[in-house]
Length: 67
Image (cartoon, rainbow, N blue to C red; front, side, top):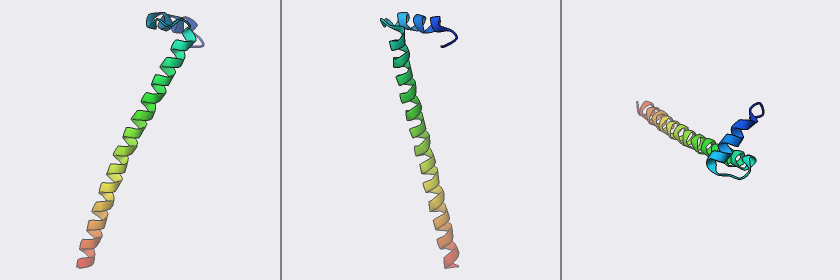
């Protein structure tokens, strides 16, 4: 946006925002919320995978101890 400031003017006028910098701030907030949400989803998936692996390891250890 630094090299092409007219792009933010186009985005601001298409969104109906009076000042172009406001449009940039709104878009930045939306992008940051999206990135935080996507990272939270990935972390939850990894946590589930770790839990499943720990359960499998624990079951395998119990089976080995019984033998």
